[in-house]
Image 1 (cartoon, rainbow, N blue to C red):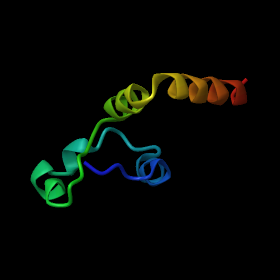
Image 2 (cartoon, helix red, strand yellow):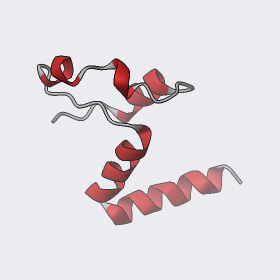
Image 3 (cartoon, rainbow, N blue to C red):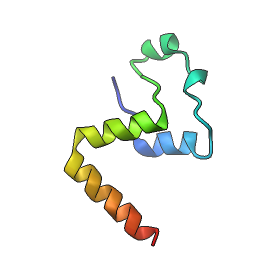
Length: 65
């Protein structure tokens, strides 16, 4: 599966409720794309490189202080 650039995903989903159901898996599979919930996307991103993900989350948290 291809991963869309994070910025594109954020721009499209910002402020939206979970809209995964609005993207039929059959249609997306033709494009080799998979719709995921925000929780699943974050979990998958962390699983790809846990130390790097934790460092990024810490940097984001520091910006919100």
